[in-house]
Image 1 (tube, rainbow, N blue to C red):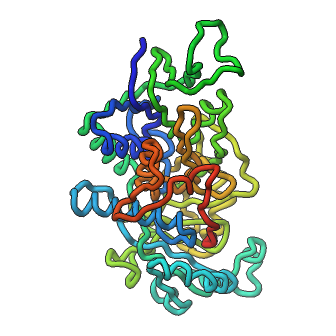
Image 2 (cartoon, rainbow, N blue to C red):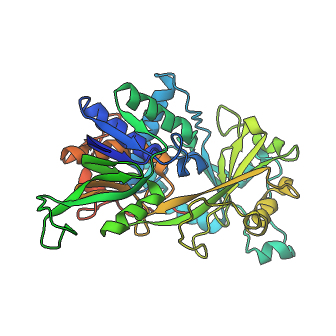
Image 3 (cartoon, rainbow, N blue to C red):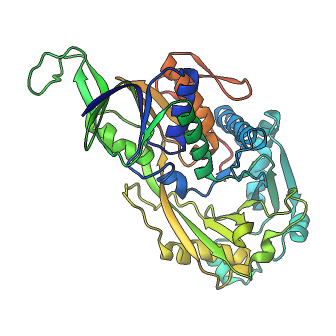
Length: 429
């Protein structure tokens, strides 16, 4: 079987569906197909996310992508009445004295961009968060072994919080299909179709002396030709791109989320002063990148951590969470700062993989030989997906600038390779 389309998108996660939706919106007459090997939308790493969103970046590009995407998600939920479970409960960074001093240096950069921040003193935190251990005694051997430091202050990003990634994907899926777009699930792309621009009918074409380009994709049952092929397959992108010698500029690394619920930790959910929901913000502890996402409906938290050094770059087709990772890495930090978690163990857990741009941890959006590649979202794909889709559509059209939601513009080449200009992100704690 063969078929022909104007555009084929590989990947029905939030990024692929955003790209398909925005191209279709810009070109209602275009024949566009989305392919995914799973049975439904957002069945890969999109659904394995912790679903946290923020606009607190010092990099102009990072901030612009996230801020406009969050504005669009707010519009979807508020004006279009499509629930995304979006809650701006805030991000709360609990900082040591050293980290707080570092924060002072770049807080001005963020406030100049209009980013709203709140600073909470140690006394504020003591009053607002029940049971938080702010200080360790000098003879606390466990705290010393873990190299834990006292908490000096908290910094809250206001336009931050949580969202349901699968609902974002379903919005794009519905709108794309309503516009006449086609999605084929249970359709695994096995390879890209690389052909000469002018076929000679010789065996083993193309040769190195022939001009060539990607002309579509192969599945297990068909060849699908397209004027442009979009690779938005996350960590699976390398399996297709490596075969034809195109660099995605990303590697994959596992991330794990652990769901904990217990009567012992319910009181931590409820706070006053941080937000209108009176819910503890998405909270990041001072050690190991350990984070806590409050989930009131589950009477508990989603817990995770960052493990950059020591965790290998590796591709797993179906990554599994590791109980020992929680027990020996996350739990010791979590239970020291929040003693309510002592003897509380996961009720559920899941794992996905980030497609990490190891150079600057920003998206790579570029064209090469008939392909439009969207890769390297580095764990922030949900919070930047709408802007990324708009930029991909502009690149597809050959426009120099993309207009993001709300009317702000960005030069497309800034997210590419040759003209890359994303800026240094300083707010990394």
